[in-house]
Image (spheres, rainbow, N blue to C red):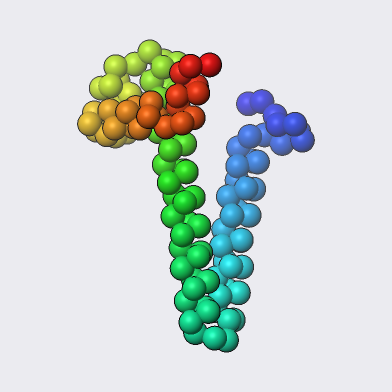
Length: 111
């Protein structure tokens, strides 16, 4: 396993980043809970939800691109990809189509 610029393994860097993400979410929720004005707290909770939804979408796009990366690098069929990543053939097809239609997927294919 290769190491990142700071000498950490990519797995450790990801574990650390995910732990920080969870800590940040917990801090945001705690701050919202402490907001004395209920309407303002609701607005803040709505903003948190919107941010989390955006992150979920970004993570789904990333997952699709990584599935496409496996598909292309290992030269798999859709059935082979589905078996490799543990999803149905239809879901594998959805992931590949999603990756191809994403702005990052188009950049990866063109350049």
